[in-house]
Structure formats: structure tokens, C-alpha cells
View 1 (cartoon, rainbow, N blue to C red):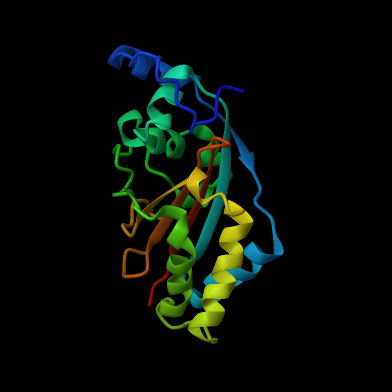
View 2: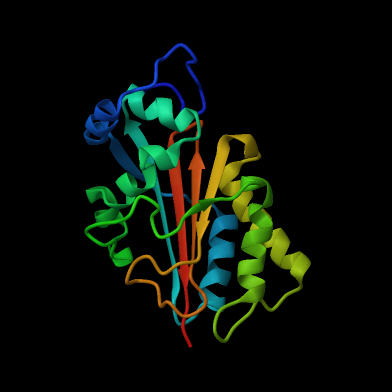
Length: 207
């Protein structure tokens, strides 16, 4: 496996545009299954609070990637490399997340995905708000503190306290037909830079 995505070789020259484009065909992904009681418990609340929509969860690890990809990703230039567009339009995403119904063509911004400056440090709060705010008809039945605890445990199952290794990108746009495009659309993309792994959580609801 090549170097981790957060390991920078400062002596490596910047790849050319031709090298960048040529490298796209060398990416190879492998599906993973994130499993933990804490994550299952949190997602059960997402399903309950977004009863007319639901969620999709996927995780993929890059098992092959060229030095060109590592150059851009290690410097936090994921957008310049168009990593998320390459991931979501790949055959493996279409097979492992078929319900997401990713369009045949996708812009480089993947429906407005934006990096959150605080990243995984605040993800538990964002996910707690997701269930306390709820969907069209249902909200978390417990207290905000209980929601925060539930979300924090789910984040810990994915992040394991390695906050510095993760980048978090978010959009609330309905970027595929799966989203209901009313008011409750969210996509969270967690990029584990140490392990070259990406976890995707999509949520939607409708009235």
C-alpha cells in the first residue's frame, strides 16, 4: 500500500495536469462494513427521526492509488484532485450504494460538498443536532445531552479519537435523486487520511 494520505513528501515535485488526469484510472477501492453497537444505536435514531426518508451508510478504502493522488490528498487538495467525484462515480459505489442513484455525470464539487473547518472535533455535535432537529415529523425523544452522548459514541466508533487524521465534508443539497429535496437532506463525508478510507452518511426525509 502507498504512503498514508496525510504523509507529505516535500521533495516530490508537483504533478502535471496530464499526470493528474492519467492517474485517475489507477484508483482502486474496496468496500468496508463499519460495525459497532454505538454506530448501530445512533443510526437507529436517524432512521426513526427521518421515518419517511432514512439514511445510507457506506465505507470504502483505497487499496491502490498512485503517487500523484497522494501528492494532492496529503496537501489537502482533494477538490483539485476531484477525489470525491472519482469516488462517487466509480462502479464500486454504484454497486455498494445502488439506492443513492448517483448521476452518470457529477460536478467536481459533488453537490456542494464543503470542508468543515473544525472537522471531526465537532462531528458529534453536528450528528446530535441531526436527530434533535429531526425530520419532517419526528425528533429525538431524549434530552440534548443524551443525543450528544449517543452521537459522540457513534463518532468514536468511526474516528477512535484520531481527530487530526480526519477531514469532514458536508452538503445539504439534494445531489442525487435519492434525496427528497425538501428540507432534511444531509451528506457527511469522513475522510480518514491515515488509512486512505472514506465513510459516507446520507440522510433525507419528506413530509
